[in-house]
Length: 157
Image 1 (cartoon, rainbow, N blue to C red):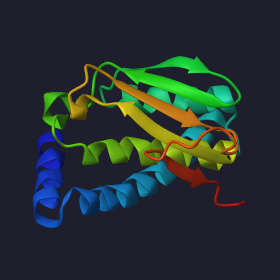
Image 2 (cartoon, rainbow, N blue to C red):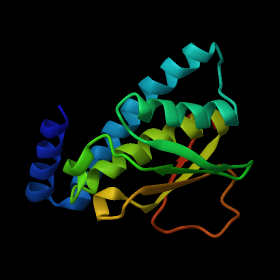
Image 3 (cartoon, rainbow, N blue to C red):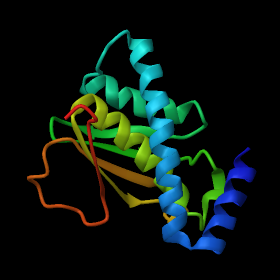
């Protein structure tokens, strides 16, 4: 399955370009985020997850697909996650569009539960780094805005 997804992303990138491929992956990531968010809310028996539950959800959902995410830090303004094992393994190298899936799933889940998310991927195995480092701002964007980050808002706000 990972090989198939990697190849599909590669075909998209070479056919329509990396930017357009990322847009498609964005859509898939948000759709997947909606499904996963409902499943985790049901598992916690909550209408909305709190900060600790959200962070645990992000780590757990990646662990279930062989990712190596852990919480580097967490406070009322942001969650910082580090990943040492990409679910796609070495197949992710050069397929940075796949990082959009993570950003959008994380962004959707965080925003739907905490009201807002700004997801930035500072380091990525797909870009040749030894790990991934993902920062998720959860406070209103009063902090300096990372132009490479994506913003997400709760659907009920």
